[in-house]
Image 1 (cartoon, rainbow, N blue to C red):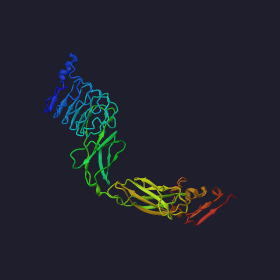
Image 2: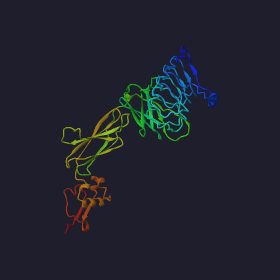
Image 3: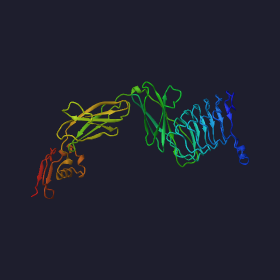
Length: 420
């Protein structure tokens, strides 16, 4: 247990069994080191390289590497490991290379590499018992090289884009064939990425909002594709990280109001409001739109009479209104900074084409060369173009209802034959 006591200046320790000795061991039964005492390496406070390859360790004490704060290279390949204690690598914050190849590891605990923010090379190849990877198994890593067998390797993240908000950034990227991604971020003036400043994003999501930032600082963001279990040959995958320095977050501002608002009264007790995007998004992408409405005579907008519409939508159908009552409808855009000002439009719902007597509705749609199921597409301008309607013979009507002919301001000829 105290075999290395007093070696406080040691930087390299090679305990691997050579290939030649390992071959001979098949005949002699020699297994090398078969167990390690807890804290056995603790005196080696300046150790930078530790090689334990080809020893028949089988398992590792949870605190076996305690005290190795300067360790940069750790080789544990071909040591018959079947599992890794959850915190076995904690404290190895300067580790750059970790070899775990040719073992029998069946599971990677969540956060097992959480302290290894500087790890660049991880070799997990030939661990044929390795099952489905957990989403958090690679938390903390920003690898440059990963060697594996039996894992579907992801494509490299592409086109990382950062958009500023008031106190957050939206990261968006393009890629495919992934289980999940990991984002790291740091202030531009920081020397390293902190383990806490990271997030794991599960596919198919390709966006993440980084919050709690200093709006006066600039940030670097790094994205990594993480692998998932699958059928693949033993291979080495290298990531080229995308890094981007974000402009000052304070430069972003609220968006302008949406433009070209319009109301259409197509159906009874309903109004369809539509609009186009603001002419200026404030330097931050539009996140959503807020729609609110009230009777024109009402003093204030009720909280219940509001709706949020996705950024890709530019219309909303308001229902439950009173025919003939004029309403004020307002629309505002929202980006990562907040909600901008409203633009306003007014209109009144009325008995729409879809709600008229069936024979009247079908006759109007026929005149407009519309399909009989397209009554919701008829506008006031369409109605004004109808000059003649006839209800004779097989098309005769038995009853009419109020407002059946409302909006037909261009009508010149109307022929009606009753039931007879």
